[in-house]
Amino acid sequence: MSTLLIRLVAPLQSWGTQSHFTNRDTGLEPSKSGVIGLICAALGRPRQAPLDDLIRLRMGVRLDRPGTIQRDFHIVQNVLLPKGNNTKDSIITNRYYLSDAAFLVGLEGELPLLEEIQQALKQPVWQLFLGRKAFPPALPIWMDDGLREDQDLLQALQACDWVVTWPPDKAPHQVLCVLEDRQGSQLRNDVPLSFAGRTFGSRRISTFLIEAPQACRRELMT
View (tube, rainbow, N blue to C red):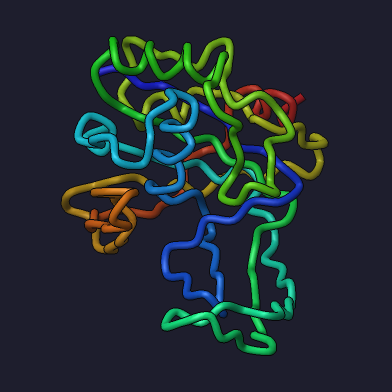
């Protein structure tokens, strides 16, 4: 198997998996549904397009800079009710997002599909955003050395340098890794079965610490 690495860096990101209209959550790292939605936008796949090939990709995330959770308080006025033309005066909503986060995401699968995705990220059909349309990426999502033909998912996440710059005296010695794992102890309900029908399946993950990228480790030892 090969691995494609992408970077998700922005002032604001949001990766909700349990959102309701009045309460828009965010996870602590990119969701699989969010990443696949981003790839679909790059490929130009409409909502009703099949997702079988994309959901088979095994996903991992390295939290290079976890960011902090922030909340926006909104009041939405003149909301149309579902059973007619009457409107509700106002609805109070809370919307959560990650501030100043940076993630390295790995997708493990067959090389031809990964090559297609890499090319699409370079020349996306539709606008790319990190969880919400108001949150564009601060850096290109694709990476020059992102396609790792001879590395599995964990090897690629361990071998890649930081996606953001850390001062040598501030960089952590270890970083958190969230890896899709059939034997994992945690369950995530974020596998998109259909974006048109908004239906999702589950997957298992493992969460653990890995050593900091080697480039940074060399700086720390000098």
